[in-house]
Image (spheres, rainbow, N blue to C red):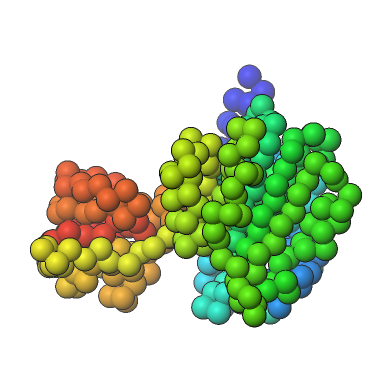
Length: 358
């Protein structure tokens, strides 16, 4: 009953605040005073490496915590435009503790470069509820192998930190791939864990040193196949593909849990079926020749700015109605031509003529 009354009061307040939601008025007073919207204030900024920035955030009261391995959408305004990106918290399972995000500033990363250069205590960011099923099982495994590359370190570090805070005796193997030792955020912490906790083994492999080490089966042999180990993997496409192949060959696929932070959106070209057709962006009254890329990429090339979040098919913020035509899901390869269907334009590419409500 209390929840229904609160919802009724909330609806009345929203109605009296038209034409804008009440949060639009509250943010004029203080952006951290919100009715519905979750926000977070930056309370600390650390530059752990030359290519990353670590933000410690204090969320508003709407934040209910995350499960280790999940991701959140955060947003920030740059030159008057709100940009959204997805990152995995690095801190352990938490409901009230500050939130920690480590962002790798890629060379072509508009938002990540902005945060690296301009993030300061006091900055307020938009924040979503956590999502994702890349999490530790409720019954903790006897042996967990955490495998990561680059910025994929954050969700698996969250898992490892969670096990440590729980006092779990789960045997843990933490294997991370980075360009060089200087490119590993949390390296000092992980070295300390490796020295002080006998049931945790931390290993680093560096891909851009005098003796580069990329993934090879020997790195997991005798580890991933021991004691029914559960393997948690997050990293760039090449690492993900190599480990998946390894798991398939060793019969470990049912114990491999993955999260991808990038996907390959290159056009799938079949020499027997060349790319043809025209895309009609019906709301914008714009048409363009199909070049095989995703609908999101082709819309942007046509000068349009459809909403999107992750470009990985995990957030659904880019869902639009395909009025007609056939599209291919680049993650699954599945074709779909049923009219008036909601599809995610970040992971669907047109096959022939397509009409899409963009």
